[in-house]
Length: 115
Image (tube, rainbow, N blue to C red; front, side, top):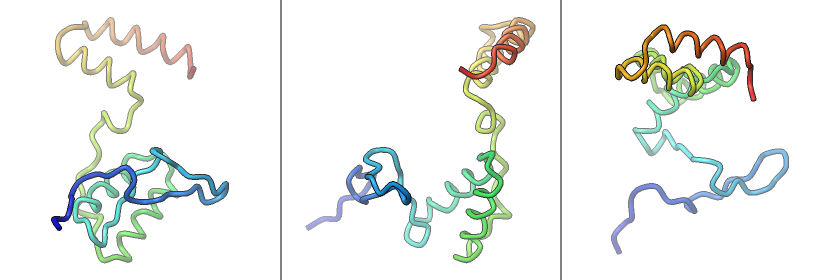
């Protein structure tokens, strides 16, 4: 019987560690011991998250497994900023928005705040 490869939504059962309920469709499992693609994904996440404690724990975990986190490229700016800023940047890059208009919109969005 051939082994089916690729993402399978029901491959792992994942439960919330405090509540105990299933995280059906809310979690993606990475296994760096068996999947070489998991290592750069975890490094990228550690570089991108604003949660410094989580980033440190992820890097420590990879170090314990013998994977270097030093050679990983830094995250792109688009990964580290909110989506609406990346959208404005894309519009300026593509030429569909003037940079000054983008800055005015950025200031308006920042003043508005979250929500």
